Amino acid sequence: MRAVHDVGFTLARGQTLGLIGESGCGKSLTALALMGLLPEGAQLSGSIRLHGQELRGLADAAWCRLRGNRIAMVFQEPMTALNPLHPVGRQMAEPLRLHQRLSARQARTQAVALLERVGIAQAAQRLGDHPHQFSGGQRQRIMIAMALACGPDLLIADEPTTALDTTLQRQILELIGALVRESGMALVLISHDLGVIARHVQRTLVMYGGTVVEAGPTPQVFARLAHPYTRGLFAARPRLGAAPHAGARLPTIAGTVPALGDLPPGCPFAGRCPWTIAACSERLPAAVDLGAGHSARCIRLDTLPTLDAGGQSA
Image: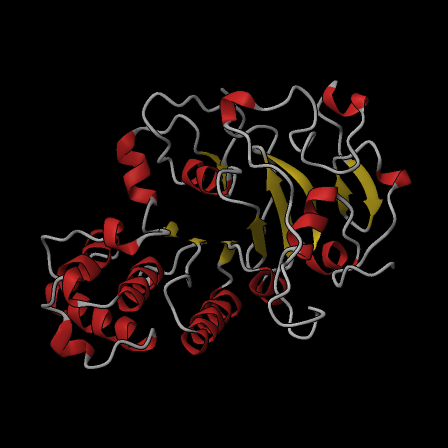
């Protein structure tokens, strides 16, 4: 089965990119491909380049020199990403000692500074604690601190704030944004939160069925919801004052996300889309240029009413 296909993008230093879409659409698998962490047996075609260096086909030793150093990732579930057998101080120090050749004392000092920066109270005293001794939100912050330790060229953040309260979520995203501006780090942010994407990334890719169905500068994508799937995502989000009365149901997208081995032969959204016609199932639509770097894969764009992010006619 083709888990992810026909996905491509370029990031310059300091640029930010967001990936949005339902669970199972290929966002996390795309991120794992960029890290050289695809599941055993997966076959990768195409090209992944970092500063002109081809990463596809690298030996494990070469990947290990890149991961945590020039490319870092904040994984979606910190409890499974952190090693339960080692204290967090040792895990924080590991990339600093391996990649930056710091001494044990220097790595400890840097680890404390990183933990303090992401909001871990009494950081110096907690270096000896194990992951289970921290809350879910604290574990997420530790993962973010580890990813930022070596000042990577590219940070991939897969739902980095799901376990955090609203105030801390804003602080963490502001911290990541500040590091992008200060160091020129590029950012790939994966999120289900459309508000987070709107505020924190310059470009947005909307993924469905393992492919990109809409892409462009975030303001353009949000101003003109071109693809029917993008419209469905925005219509389903809760908005203050939008419901006619308390308890009103949000609009939903009909049906369920198809399994990767059961995708329709044409547009992956065919069947769930209210504008589906027979031609939608013939082949994957080509990306249609909408201007200003904005594109969408839909053969019916000319017949659909133009909507903005509020669901109103634009």
